[in-house]
Image 1: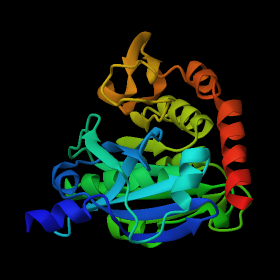
Image 2: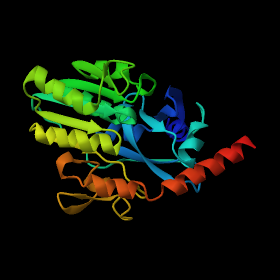
Image 3: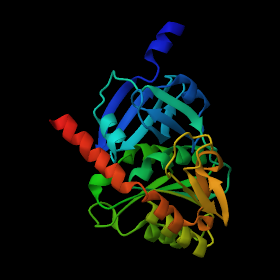
Image 4: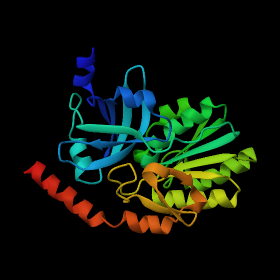
Length: 285
């Protein structure tokens, strides 16, 4: 039995496309599947000598010994990952890492996922509902093609609302509009969790603060080791330096310096794009 587990570990047992350039992988990682909690992540290496990338655990099945990862193709490593198939395996899957989401019964909780952020908000919605909260899921994206996990979120939440920038599915508007609508409908929202692009989290956190709603955001800056050693993931929260990999990834949104975070996120954007383009030329030649 031990030899079988060692042979299969980190193997991809399911791979499917959720949206353009967004892939789901269900991966054998029994120890991670058993130990993980909502909000935690893993560090993955696709191949020997490859880049280490942080990926939030979107779901897990302790009995099957698998975790679910949702990955958006952005740079070379995620492009390389997109070319893996069922039966292939990652070299490393290290985790669970990061501080787990504080789960407690508070009342009505809005779990807001913007684009790729729908995946990491899913396990938080599951846990918040299991704790006895009324959980309203909000799926937000630029258009309907970028939405996914509709059924998964409906199973995890008491209610799910869909908003798109262009109105191609659900209501037309932004995640901030969705949060204001919830307050209008319920009178009070006791907690919000927003995960998605930095601008989306910035303005949802600002809106939540204006409405008196404690609003958590989950950050995903540049990260190397995942243990607080490299300092690449440092952010400013409440005027103090924090390290996302060990102090987060979740923080009170109104305390995050999003402008600084945006600048740091853009530091290697050109290099990331160039690396991706070189890799694509190599695989196409």
